[in-house]
Length: 195
Image 1 (cartoon, helix red, strand yellow):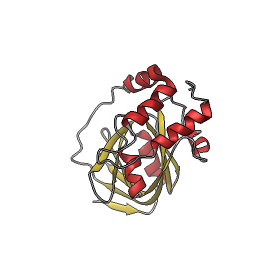
Image 2: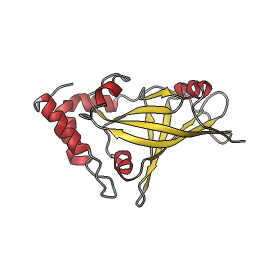
Image 3: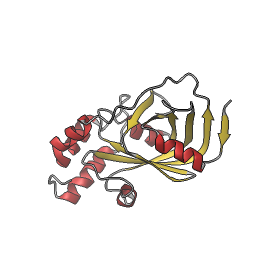
Image 4: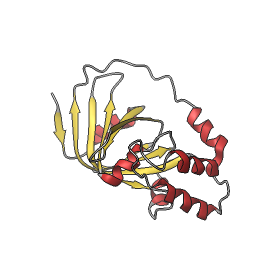
């Protein structure tokens, strides 16, 4: 039976920390709903009412576009081993772009990555758990190295060029705000290839 909570409990935080994968869902008032799988060491439960996660450069940038239209965000975690459980975290999120005043203080929560594109800061308004009886068992075999390799090969300047080319709008044509972040990073680094 599902249970509802107002915040992330220590037990919830421990469950979240054990998961190798989570899903993020967002939607603008119109257009497509987006659900993205996220892996790697990219999420921090900062407090019972706050979660921050690091978004690396990818082929789409739907989450950032949606948050400019509507701050709603849901994160979902599933147990693929041990006891079954699904945990969803609901709330309002904001995008922190490179160059924003709180980028550096928040980015310190994570290992630096040349492909770091945004931070998403989620204010939690509720947490729900459910049984997860229908979620199958899966064995964790490790992280994929392709994204790290792709980013390292291009370097920071090349990643920013990719943002401008492929990440400036959503699939529904909504702006993501990444071009201003790319400009700010270029200005900060003098246009050079920094990491």
